[in-house]
Length: 113
Ligand code: HEC
Image (cartoon, rainbow, N blue to C red; front, side, top):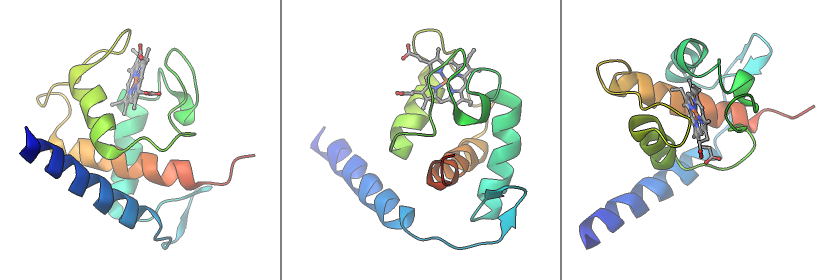
């Protein structure tokens, strides 16, 4: 159990450290900082957009306005919660899920109108 807590802590620290790096080319009207994030946009459009349009609230809550750590996003997606269905690996592969997390991190850093 301690071990898991440490892993989560390390993941969190790494995520926070990466979170402050801003680089990359503008892509459409969004600034996506990596290929993974660009792939994440496609995955997001397919699986998440219907309920979290543009990361905003729809059927689900807004997910572009709060600092959700990656592991929480992954957990929510894998397990589902409330009205959100779970997305098993057969539907959404681990790399696809990583890409969505990268995309959401970028989305959150966009200037809000
Ligand atoms: C069928 C609609 C639906 C789809 C599709 C969907 N979600 Fe959700 N999502 C929801 C709902 C509803 C909630 C709120 C669940 C609750 O807390 O009761 C939610 C909550 C979340 C949360 C937690 C937000 C918070 O404030 O804690 C995250 C993160 C999230 N969704 C990410 C995703 C991602 C990433 C995808 C695509 C892989 C996705 N969702 C697809 C409906 C959906």
